[in-house]
Amino acid sequence: MRDVEPGELLVADQDGLRSERFATGPRASCLFEHVYIARPDSLIGGQRVQQVRQAFGALLARQSPVPADVVVAVPDTARAAALGYAQAAGIDYGEGLIRNHYLGRTFLRPTDERRRDDVRLKLNPVPEVVRGRRVVLVDDSLVRATSMRHAVGLLRKAGAAEVHVRIASATISWPCYFGVDISSQDELAGHHMTTGEIAVHVGADSLAFLSTEGMREAVGGEPTLCMGCFTGLYPTSVPAGAPAPPASARTATPPGRTPPPAR
Ligand code: SF4
Image (cartoon, rainbow, N blue to C red):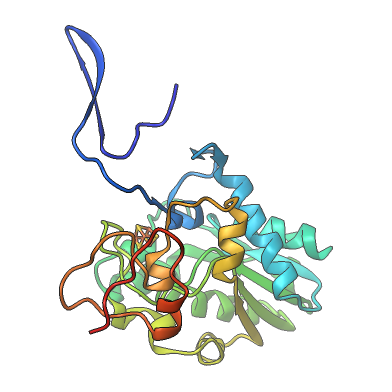
């Protein structure tokens, strides 16, 4: 019927259905919902997540093109972005990696060991799709780079001639203080490595991220977004001792938002 608003409590009891407010104040919806968390058939702020993810991929193709023969998604959450990349670039889309559906999401695992085990079990390559071909491998986001390193290795073992990694979101370099279990900042590949270093680390021929401007454009210029894990700029105050964003990010504070103070 409609979204349950942030800070809204819907009560259904013997008197029927009523809406109550338990919080008020500025709103900011989570951009990572569009990137990874939400089901692709969800509507967020009137936008279909599948379409937004395709737009992320199309913008990424325009920002970071590369000569290639096939576009492959890291399944399943990157499928829409990979499709958008393939359509915008005019390159074939192929199912070069197949996911084992009996496992959950590896980035939520509590330990590196569990994540490594899961990553090994999670994906299988399809050699017929990638053998001898230049592959663009699209993922929705890059957190620790563990899964990506494994995926690139699988494609190379399956005979891919080149593997170019394209990430359909900006670099995640900052923690989330609002309940999304991304990681501690030290574990984030985007925090302790440059883009070039990540490319070397995962074994890719090239690697590129979508820009934060591209993400904002794909969600239709939504004015009240939280992009904190991408920019270090949060819509509310953050805990004392939180890392401060670089000066360049602080000067780029979007209207209506306050960067955390330098520490
Ligand atoms: S920091 Fe903001 S955009 Fe990132 S996961 Fe948390 S709520 Fe979402």
